[in-house]
Length: 72
Image (tube, rainbow, N blue to C red; front, side, top):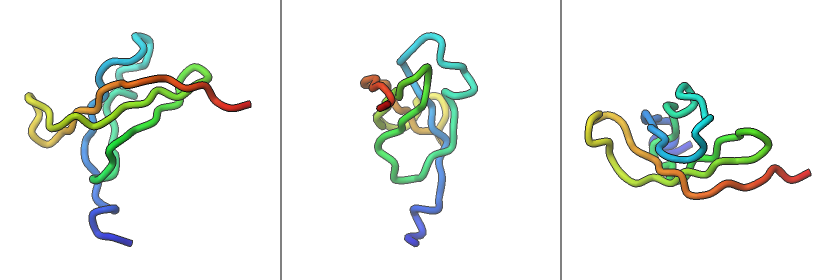
């Protein structure tokens, strides 16, 4: 396993549904992850990496891009 794949960063999720709980908007994610997918209300909220946080140097911001439904 690649060393960077085991490292995690603090991710801050911006945008998306208003009812997404605050505790889900902060999470640890693999260092090289460009996208994050969050299961929410029968679908997935998709977030893409936009860059470092302006207020938290150790965190990376991911911005909401779209929602998809869970396949049945």
